[in-house]
Length: 401
Image (tube, rainbow, N blue to C red; front, top):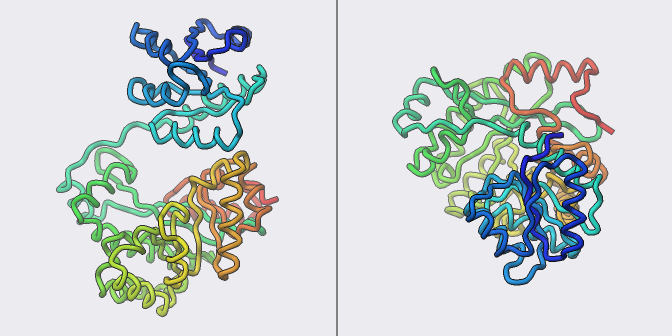
């Protein structure tokens, strides 16, 4: 475990502040700075102190922990924070969401009284997460460069596996766009999606991914895999009343039956241009495509969408799935979403499973399918085929019980 060289404790209670300082010294902290409230802590930052970690109470005089986190997000957003508080867990969960919204990297919450073991575990987990998730910033590309890449078919689908939570079998994958750039290597969606959306030019990429995913589906099924492949439809595409016919023509032209593909639509997309969207989605369902409502729980008209659109699948947003085994409110939301979906005869997918604990929680709640880094990261077609064959031969990628 790597201990940050400098740690700032923001805590108004003198005794608890001293106890925390001793715990940190005992686990190897070289420098521990102390502040009695957020205002004093900001003064230390203004004086040039740049801690590698902040441990912050919430209920403090003059400037409480929430206000301090807001200021910290503006001044030092890369500094990780641990909240130490005796507040109700539901309130702590709200503060965690607030910290994330302010751009602060929250390592976790220490419920008082703090124990040295829990403190060390949070610091260690934060260090592991930083190394595991660190990625170089995406290169900046112009719209012309991106569109040239699309014309040259440099964009390819990567496949993130979906497992049946009962059997552990691979039953599908989500096709996610990646750019095989001739000089930059593999470029993630952060390098091109926003530019295309802002210019209202996403359709070309959507149809290229659909065609390539359909070809891959045909090859995977010819290799003996009984899988379906999901592809995202953009918001703008749904406003074109010819979309369903075009999608069907592309997929069947690749030698794939529509029933072997799922089209994922976000809640927001389904609310846009309602009449043509409903016409397209109904026609696509009549053709045999599966329809998935993606990022369920993040929009504003979820129940209305489920009532009016012929969905076959509900995909619970990773914001609720990741860590649901630890956060009671998220667990309740996931449980209610699963019950609603099953009552409507919809298949359920949990997106964003990253730990054994979350896998166990979702499986116990009766979720049908699982997707996330715990199972597998997005991979190219050859790697996905190898992943599937490995599981068929009993090489488990993740626990199934």
